[in-house]
Image (cartoon, rainbow, N blue to C red; front, top):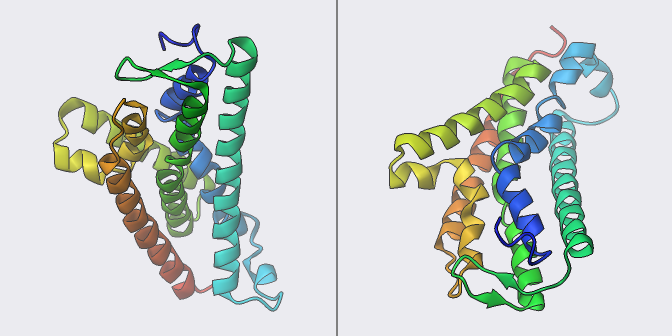
Length: 219
């Protein structure tokens, strides 16, 4: 934050830090949390499933659409904040978290990698939102409960969370990029966060798919 007036590359990192608190879980949940519940709300499941598509195909299409929206939204936010910083401040070297100066090329690469690193936990929150949407059949719950879960994870990690707990919660992945902004970068938090995100994603998507397959649509 102190470097925002000295380098335009600090702006997207500050935005990323604040977005990780609540905006990224919201972005990840806003489509995935309602993409299935909307079919229940409008009672259109029978219409959708008469279009020569199986439940598996419909499920895959909706999940992929949710992931694509999330990726595009995060990319737009990253590029917009980067462009704003470069236009308003400039391409000066960036002071990293170790106090060393990063030349513009390395600073740009670090910023882009930092934003890319939040995609795995964001996709995991998409899967969580899809699971809640399928299980509750409520768009409000599908969007709200994952966001509430994210805030709860962050609060518990800040107040009295053990090291193991911090490694297992999804929200830790939103801050793992800090290791990239050191004079000697370290990648263990990024790898741990990616692995945890994959486990959450696979578990939530599998559970959501099984619930949808067992549902009596006609009933």
